[in-house]
Length: 178
Image (cartoon, rainbow, N blue to C red; front, side, top):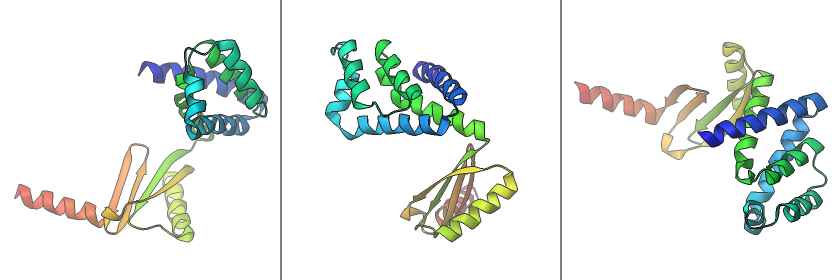
């Protein structure tokens, strides 16, 4: 929890600077690119997170390797190095995404089905939910063959379970109480 709170503070500052610069999308993209680069190479990740590597050397290497990043994103990363907060980078990106989504008034929507939905079916489902809840959604689609059939929808803290597996669980629960 303390790391989440601290990461939220950094993300809020980065988001405010990105908003002032009119580059929220670019800064978000660049932060994701940076974290993905860390995740892609274990040696780079180890170098970035190492407390043994001199901060000035680390800053110089990162500044040179990621010189194409937006200034706000690059300076945020360099600040993390100066403050020895490198391990917060992934959580800061997650908190930045939350702030960006809130600024747009959007919610997350997770659609899980037994097999992949076609683009047309997913679009119809999202359009109906958008009209019903009067909010835009950031959609993530997952496939879980254990659901047998149907769709499970998760919107923030709400869940709609229209799967066969969910109905079977409900039936089993009802039969066990009688």
